[in-house]
Length: 386
Image (cartoon, rainbow, N blue to C red; front, side):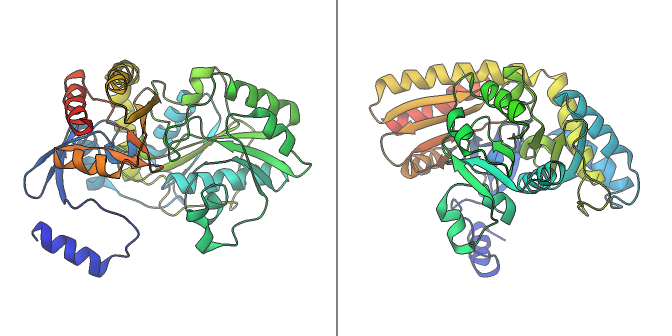
C-alpha cells in the first residue's frame, strides 16, 4: 500500500488511541528512519526510548532470527535457556535478587504493586504527583494525570499522591497500611523532571527506617539511558523493587520486575503467558551485550553532556527556550510556548522529536548517537526556533 492508503486504512481498522504524525515509517538504520516515500529522518525520539542500540541492529536481528528458527515460545511451564541467561545478567547489573518477566513497563509495574502487597501484607501505595506508571488499571492507579484516568474510574483504592522531590511530603503520607513508595528516578512523561541529587538517597533511608518498600520505575530511565544501566546506580543505593522495559530488547516487547532477595512471589501468585519468551529474551541478551561491548553507558553520558551544553547555548539565543534539563540521553527542553508546532516543523525538516507535557521537547535518541548526528539535529532545531 502507498502512504495515503495506509493512513486511510488505519483510520477505518484501528482504534484511534494515538495522535500519529502524518508519515509512514518503512525501515530504519542506526539513528535514522525512512518513510515509505524514501524521506530520511534523524530519530531523536528512539521509539520512545525503546531502540537503545539503534534501528536495524544487525546484532539484534541475528539473535532474533536465529532464535525464531529454533523456538519462539513454549510458555513458562518449561525451562528455557535464553530467559535464565537474561535473568542472570539483570541480577548482576542490578545488584538485586530475582526477576519476573512480562511484556511491558505497565505490566512490570503491575507485578511490582502486587509483589509489594504480597510481601508486606499491607495495601496502600504512595506515588507522586505528575507520575506516569502505565495505563493498565493498577499502573493507572499509580499515575497522576487526571485525563488518563477519568474515563476509567474507579481506579484501584489505596493510592496516595505526594509532591515529587519532597521526602517530607512522603513522610507525612505514611500510615499503618502503607506497603511501598513508587517513584521514577526522573519523571519522563511529565517533562523530564530531575529531582535533587539527594532525593532518592533520603527517600531510600526513610523507607528503610519505616520498613516500607521502595519501588523504582526505571521503565524509561533504565537500560543505560542516563549513563548507568540503572539510574539509581548514580546514587549508590538499591531499591527493594525495580521495573524495566522499553529499551531492554531494542524495541522487541519485554518487561521485567526485579526484587531484592527475600521479596518473591509464590507459585501461582502471578504469571504471564508470553513473559520471558525465547524471542524477547534473545533480543534483550543481544542488546545488553552490545551496550556493554560498545561502552554505550559512557557514550550516553558523554553525548548527553555535549547535547545539553549545546542546547543551553540555543537557550541563550532564543527567548522561546525556558530551560534545558536531563541526565545522559534523557533530555527535555522546556519552551515558553506549546511545542507541538515546533515538533511538527522539525518533522518537516527531517528530525523526529517528541512533544510532552504540552511545552517540553523530549529527546530519547539511540545510545549509539554521535556528535555529528547531534550537530545535525541542533542545526535543524536552531533553524526551526529561528
